[in-house]
Image (cartoon, rainbow, N blue to C red):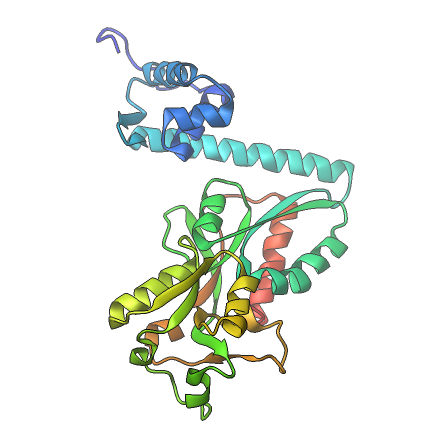
Length: 315
């Protein structure tokens, strides 16, 4: 910036500029923002530079690893996010004024919770809000948290989510983990009396596990590292059904929360064994929203339904 030009501290950045700045921050790079916005990287760069000149300071530190917001940049990004939230809220309220109970609600869900959540929350929600378009996104814990942080979802539910500065946990519920296996597996026979499984008993065992990026996989990797147990991973998957199938058909064992087995029934040939590990016994599922965001009415009603579900001990 020219030393003779004073920054326009009272300037209001146009929506066009704010959208570009927000896209750069969320993608971590100018190129990523350009792909999202359908613009050339040079056009994105010109927009950012023009905003920096107007404000008299740098918004992003550019480097080989991408673009990171400065202190001023974080202020502008927060403003851009709040503007977008207000626009979404305004659009939703206009829709509701025209058609009662209209709008959109989006939820990101860890795969293991999808069946219960659908039956006990989403189906009743759709029945009570027939004019709302409900969008359900599934994936691993990392993907669920990323979707919420990037405004791809209004509410999120996941197992053992990592801390995130943009995410607020509304409530949580215990999901103590155990090792699941066939009722005919040697470990199941050895612990028919209900005694807890000792970590060293897993040495050399064939295991099935979720792919990296799932909270369950992170807990599995941490468990074997902490206890110094060597196991053979015979299956990696993003499918709950494939994981359970590996227990009954391939003689594998797997770390699993009770919710994964909730739909199998009392006559299932899969059993969940308690394990002597205080960390696994303390694992929780978390219901989350993005910190500081005002949800549109349709999304807020979904949030309330999920909170009630948690409060009734269903999660």
